[in-house]
Length: 310
Image 1 (cartoon, helix red, strand yellow):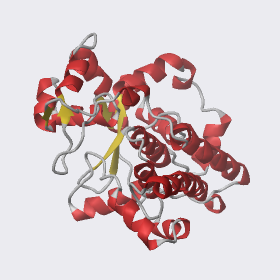
Image 2: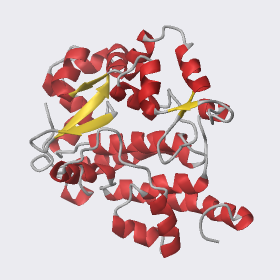
Image 3: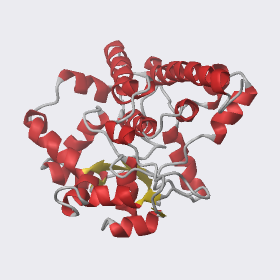
Image 4: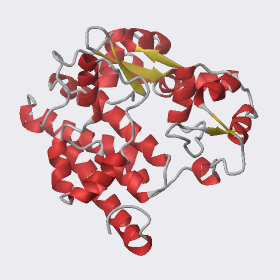
Protein backbone atom coordinates (compact mmCIF):
# COMPACT_ATOMS: atom_id res chain seq x y z
CA UNK A 1 0.00 0.00 0.00
CA UNK A 2 1.36 3.44 -0.89
CA UNK A 3 0.87 7.03 0.13
CA UNK A 4 -0.08 9.38 -2.72
CA UNK A 5 1.20 12.80 -1.73
CA UNK A 6 -0.98 14.57 -4.26
CA UNK A 7 -4.22 13.18 -2.85
CA UNK A 8 -3.54 12.37 0.80
CA UNK A 9 -2.50 15.50 2.70
CA UNK A 10 0.21 15.23 5.26
CA UNK A 11 0.16 17.02 8.59
CA UNK A 12 -0.68 20.70 8.02
CA UNK A 13 -0.74 23.75 10.27
CA UNK A 14 -3.25 23.46 13.07
CA UNK A 15 -5.64 25.95 11.45
CA UNK A 16 -6.35 23.48 8.68
CA UNK A 17 -7.35 20.62 10.94
CA UNK A 18 -10.98 19.74 11.30
CA UNK A 19 -11.46 20.15 15.06
CA UNK A 20 -9.88 22.21 17.84
CA UNK A 21 -9.18 19.07 19.83
CA UNK A 22 -7.45 17.39 16.93
CA UNK A 23 -5.48 20.55 16.26
CA UNK A 24 -4.14 20.65 19.80
CA UNK A 25 -3.36 16.95 19.76
CA UNK A 26 -1.54 17.14 16.44
CA UNK A 27 0.50 20.14 17.63
CA UNK A 28 1.54 18.25 20.77
CA UNK A 29 2.36 15.06 18.88
CA UNK A 30 4.41 16.93 16.24
CA UNK A 31 6.48 18.60 18.93
CA UNK A 32 7.15 15.23 20.52
CA UNK A 33 8.11 13.76 17.14
CA UNK A 34 10.96 16.22 16.73
CA UNK A 35 12.11 16.11 20.34
CA UNK A 36 12.13 12.34 20.68
CA UNK A 37 14.43 11.69 17.74
CA UNK A 38 16.65 14.77 17.64
CA UNK A 39 16.93 16.50 21.01
CA UNK A 40 19.69 14.38 22.53
CA UNK A 41 21.75 14.72 19.36
CA UNK A 42 21.40 18.50 19.06
CA UNK A 43 23.13 19.16 22.35
CA UNK A 44 26.23 17.37 21.13
CA UNK A 45 25.90 13.75 22.24
CA UNK A 46 27.66 11.27 19.98
CA UNK A 47 27.01 7.54 20.14
CA UNK A 48 29.40 5.51 22.22
CA UNK A 49 30.21 3.53 19.08
CA UNK A 50 31.14 6.72 17.26
CA UNK A 51 33.22 7.89 20.22
CA UNK A 52 35.09 4.61 20.08
CA UNK A 53 36.26 5.76 16.65
CA UNK A 54 36.70 4.16 13.27
CA UNK A 55 38.73 6.83 11.60
CA UNK A 56 40.79 4.36 9.68
CA UNK A 57 44.10 6.04 10.56
CA UNK A 58 46.91 3.66 9.71
CA UNK A 59 44.44 1.06 8.43
CA UNK A 60 43.60 -0.06 4.92
CA UNK A 61 40.42 1.55 3.58
CA UNK A 62 38.04 -0.09 1.14
CA UNK A 63 35.08 1.24 -0.83
CA UNK A 64 31.44 0.58 -0.17
CA UNK A 65 30.93 -2.22 -2.71
CA UNK A 66 33.81 -4.44 -1.50
CA UNK A 67 32.94 -3.60 2.11
CA UNK A 68 29.38 -4.82 1.56
CA UNK A 69 30.70 -8.01 0.02
CA UNK A 70 33.03 -8.68 2.93
CA UNK A 71 30.11 -8.31 5.34
CA UNK A 72 27.85 -10.55 3.29
CA UNK A 73 25.37 -7.76 2.57
CA UNK A 74 23.74 -6.44 -0.57
CA UNK A 75 24.38 -2.82 -1.45
CA UNK A 76 20.99 -1.82 -0.03
CA UNK A 77 21.56 -3.74 3.18
CA UNK A 78 25.02 -2.22 3.55
CA UNK A 79 23.63 1.30 3.02
CA UNK A 80 21.08 0.63 5.75
CA UNK A 81 23.80 -0.63 8.11
CA UNK A 82 25.77 2.58 7.55
CA UNK A 83 22.63 4.69 7.97
CA UNK A 84 21.85 3.04 11.31
CA UNK A 85 25.40 3.41 12.57
CA UNK A 86 26.04 -0.33 12.62
CA UNK A 87 28.97 0.17 10.23
CA UNK A 88 31.03 3.32 10.68
CA UNK A 89 32.66 5.05 7.75
CA UNK A 90 36.29 6.06 7.79
CA UNK A 91 37.67 9.30 6.30
CA UNK A 92 36.39 9.93 2.76
CA UNK A 93 38.76 9.60 -0.15
CA UNK A 94 37.99 11.53 -3.31
CA UNK A 95 34.52 12.35 -2.00
CA UNK A 96 33.47 8.71 -1.57
CA UNK A 97 33.06 6.99 1.78
CA UNK A 98 35.69 4.44 2.71
CA UNK A 99 35.64 1.77 5.41
CA UNK A 100 38.54 0.60 7.55
CA UNK A 101 39.45 -3.08 7.61
CA UNK A 102 39.41 -2.94 11.39
CA UNK A 103 35.82 -1.68 11.31
CA UNK A 104 34.74 -4.47 8.99
CA UNK A 105 36.44 -7.01 11.24
CA UNK A 106 34.64 -5.54 14.26
CA UNK A 107 31.27 -6.03 12.56
CA UNK A 108 32.18 -9.53 11.33
CA UNK A 109 33.23 -10.59 14.83
CA UNK A 110 29.81 -9.79 16.33
CA UNK A 111 27.83 -12.74 17.61
CA UNK A 112 25.54 -14.31 15.02
CA UNK A 113 27.19 -12.74 11.98
CA UNK A 114 26.07 -12.62 9.21
CA UNK A 115 22.49 -13.69 9.96
CA UNK A 116 22.05 -11.40 12.96
CA UNK A 117 23.40 -8.47 10.96
CA UNK A 118 20.97 -9.09 8.11
CA UNK A 119 18.09 -9.27 10.58
CA UNK A 120 19.01 -5.84 11.96
CA UNK A 121 18.89 -4.18 8.55
CA UNK A 122 16.01 -6.13 6.98
CA UNK A 123 13.17 -3.90 5.77
CA UNK A 124 9.71 -4.31 4.26
CA UNK A 125 8.08 -1.82 1.92
CA UNK A 126 4.49 -0.65 2.12
CA UNK A 127 1.58 -1.27 4.47
CA UNK A 128 0.65 -4.69 3.10
CA UNK A 129 4.06 -6.25 3.72
CA UNK A 130 4.51 -4.47 7.06
CA UNK A 131 1.05 -5.57 8.24
CA UNK A 132 1.89 -9.19 7.44
CA UNK A 133 4.99 -9.00 9.63
CA UNK A 134 2.88 -7.72 12.53
CA UNK A 135 -0.06 -10.05 11.90
CA UNK A 136 -2.62 -7.27 11.39
CA UNK A 137 -4.60 -5.90 8.48
CA UNK A 138 -3.19 -3.15 6.23
CA UNK A 139 -5.76 -0.60 7.41
CA UNK A 140 -4.81 -1.06 11.05
CA UNK A 141 -1.13 -0.86 10.22
CA UNK A 142 -1.70 2.34 8.25
CA UNK A 143 -3.52 3.88 11.20
CA UNK A 144 -0.71 2.96 13.59
CA UNK A 145 1.88 4.44 11.25
CA UNK A 146 -0.06 7.61 10.43
CA UNK A 147 -0.61 8.25 14.14
CA UNK A 148 3.11 8.03 14.88
CA UNK A 149 3.35 4.70 16.65
CA UNK A 150 5.76 3.32 14.01
CA UNK A 151 8.62 5.18 12.38
CA UNK A 152 9.70 4.57 8.78
CA UNK A 153 13.39 4.05 8.20
CA UNK A 154 13.38 4.99 4.49
CA UNK A 155 11.19 5.77 1.51
CA UNK A 156 10.87 4.95 -2.15
CA UNK A 157 8.93 6.78 -4.86
CA UNK A 158 7.06 4.38 -7.15
CA UNK A 159 6.21 4.82 -10.82
CA UNK A 160 2.98 6.57 -9.86
CA UNK A 161 4.99 9.18 -7.93
CA UNK A 162 3.62 7.91 -4.65
CA UNK A 163 5.65 7.47 -1.47
CA UNK A 164 6.27 3.91 -0.34
CA UNK A 165 7.51 3.83 3.24
CA UNK A 166 10.04 1.22 4.40
CA UNK A 167 10.12 -0.17 7.93
CA UNK A 168 12.68 -2.22 9.82
CA UNK A 169 11.29 -5.72 10.21
CA UNK A 170 12.87 -6.10 13.64
CA UNK A 171 11.13 -2.95 14.88
CA UNK A 172 7.75 -4.11 13.63
CA UNK A 173 8.11 -7.42 15.45
CA UNK A 174 9.30 -5.68 18.58
CA UNK A 175 6.30 -3.34 18.55
CA UNK A 176 3.89 -6.24 18.03
CA UNK A 177 5.37 -8.05 21.02
CA UNK A 178 5.46 -4.95 23.21
CA UNK A 179 2.02 -3.50 22.36
CA UNK A 180 -0.34 -6.44 21.68
CA UNK A 181 -3.35 -4.36 22.74
CA UNK A 182 -2.69 -1.94 19.88
CA UNK A 183 -3.10 -4.77 17.38
CA UNK A 184 -6.77 -5.40 18.14
CA UNK A 185 -9.88 -3.57 19.26
CA UNK A 186 -10.88 -0.01 18.51
CA UNK A 187 -8.43 2.85 18.16
CA UNK A 188 -7.79 4.94 21.29
CA UNK A 189 -9.34 8.44 21.34
CA UNK A 190 -6.09 10.28 20.46
CA UNK A 191 -5.69 8.15 17.34
CA UNK A 192 -9.31 8.66 16.36
CA UNK A 193 -8.88 12.42 16.63
CA UNK A 194 -5.72 12.36 14.53
CA UNK A 195 -7.39 10.26 11.85
CA UNK A 196 -10.44 12.54 11.83
CA UNK A 197 -8.03 15.44 11.25
CA UNK A 198 -6.38 13.50 8.39
CA UNK A 199 -3.04 13.88 10.17
CA UNK A 200 -0.10 11.87 8.92
CA UNK A 201 2.95 11.73 11.19
CA UNK A 202 4.97 9.44 8.94
CA UNK A 203 6.92 12.26 7.18
CA UNK A 204 7.92 14.15 10.37
CA UNK A 205 8.67 10.89 12.18
CA UNK A 206 10.96 9.83 9.35
CA UNK A 207 12.64 13.26 9.25
CA UNK A 208 13.27 13.13 12.99
CA UNK A 209 14.87 9.74 12.68
CA UNK A 210 16.90 10.74 9.62
CA UNK A 211 18.24 13.90 11.25
CA UNK A 212 19.03 12.09 14.49
CA UNK A 213 21.02 9.41 12.68
CA UNK A 214 22.96 12.00 10.69
CA UNK A 215 23.83 13.95 13.83
CA UNK A 216 25.18 10.83 15.48
CA UNK A 217 27.70 10.38 12.68
CA UNK A 218 29.64 13.59 13.29
CA UNK A 219 30.90 15.67 16.20
CA UNK A 220 31.94 18.59 13.97
CA UNK A 221 29.77 21.58 14.98
CA UNK A 222 29.49 23.02 11.47
CA UNK A 223 28.54 19.66 10.00
CA UNK A 224 25.91 19.22 12.71
CA UNK A 225 24.52 22.67 11.97
CA UNK A 226 24.43 21.78 8.26
CA UNK A 227 22.31 18.71 9.01
CA UNK A 228 19.74 20.83 10.83
CA UNK A 229 19.83 23.54 8.17
CA UNK A 230 19.13 21.00 5.44
CA UNK A 231 15.67 20.27 6.90
CA UNK A 232 14.48 23.87 6.98
CA UNK A 233 12.48 25.40 4.11
CA UNK A 234 14.48 28.04 2.25
CA UNK A 235 12.61 31.03 3.65
CA UNK A 236 13.10 29.80 7.22
CA UNK A 237 16.79 29.18 6.61
CA UNK A 238 17.21 32.74 5.37
CA UNK A 239 15.66 34.03 8.58
CA UNK A 240 17.69 31.71 10.80
CA UNK A 241 21.01 32.33 9.00
CA UNK A 242 21.03 35.86 7.54
CA UNK A 243 24.80 35.79 6.92
CA UNK A 244 25.38 34.64 3.28
CA UNK A 245 28.88 33.35 4.07
CA UNK A 246 27.49 31.08 6.77
CA UNK A 247 24.83 29.78 4.40
CA UNK A 248 27.58 28.93 1.88
CA UNK A 249 29.39 26.88 4.52
CA UNK A 250 26.20 25.08 5.54
CA UNK A 251 25.32 24.32 1.92
CA UNK A 252 28.80 22.92 1.26
CA UNK A 253 28.50 20.63 4.29
CA UNK A 254 24.88 19.60 3.68
CA UNK A 255 24.34 15.83 3.77
CA UNK A 256 23.48 14.13 0.48
CA UNK A 257 19.98 12.75 -0.06
CA UNK A 258 19.45 9.39 1.65
CA UNK A 259 20.06 6.08 -0.07
CA UNK A 260 17.19 5.30 -2.42
CA UNK A 261 16.43 8.93 -3.20
CA UNK A 262 15.24 8.91 -6.84
CA UNK A 263 17.24 10.39 -9.69
CA UNK A 264 14.33 10.79 -12.12
CA UNK A 265 13.31 14.49 -11.88
CA UNK A 266 9.57 13.92 -11.47
CA UNK A 267 10.07 11.40 -8.66
CA UNK A 268 12.86 13.46 -7.09
CA UNK A 269 10.53 16.45 -6.87
CA UNK A 270 8.11 14.36 -4.81
CA UNK A 271 10.87 13.02 -2.59
CA UNK A 272 12.33 16.48 -1.95
CA UNK A 273 9.14 17.39 -0.12
CA UNK A 274 9.94 14.69 2.42
CA UNK A 275 13.31 16.26 3.21
CA UNK A 276 11.89 19.56 4.48
CA UNK A 277 10.05 20.29 7.72
CA UNK A 278 6.48 21.33 7.05
CA UNK A 279 4.21 22.00 10.03
CA UNK A 280 4.97 25.19 12.01
CA UNK A 281 5.78 23.29 15.20
CA UNK A 282 8.28 21.09 13.40
CA UNK A 283 9.86 24.03 11.58
CA UNK A 284 10.18 25.95 14.86
CA UNK A 285 11.91 23.02 16.53
CA UNK A 286 14.52 22.61 13.80
CA UNK A 287 15.11 26.36 13.55
CA UNK A 288 15.65 26.62 17.30
CA UNK A 289 17.97 23.61 17.19
CA UNK A 290 19.93 25.16 14.30
CA UNK A 291 20.39 28.42 16.17
CA UNK A 292 21.71 26.48 19.17
CA UNK A 293 24.10 24.49 16.98
CA UNK A 294 25.33 27.62 15.21
CA UNK A 295 26.22 29.21 18.52
CA UNK A 296 28.66 26.39 19.18
CA UNK A 297 29.97 26.36 15.61
CA UNK A 298 30.64 30.09 15.62
CA UNK A 299 32.41 29.79 18.94
CA UNK A 300 34.70 27.12 17.53
CA UNK A 301 35.50 29.21 14.47
CA UNK A 302 36.42 32.22 16.60
CA UNK A 303 38.72 30.16 18.78
CA UNK A 304 40.39 27.97 16.15
CA UNK A 305 39.45 29.29 12.71
CA UNK A 306 39.17 25.70 11.55
CA UNK A 307 35.90 26.01 9.66
CA UNK A 308 33.24 28.57 8.91
CA UNK A 309 33.13 32.37 8.98
CA UNK A 310 34.95 34.20 11.73
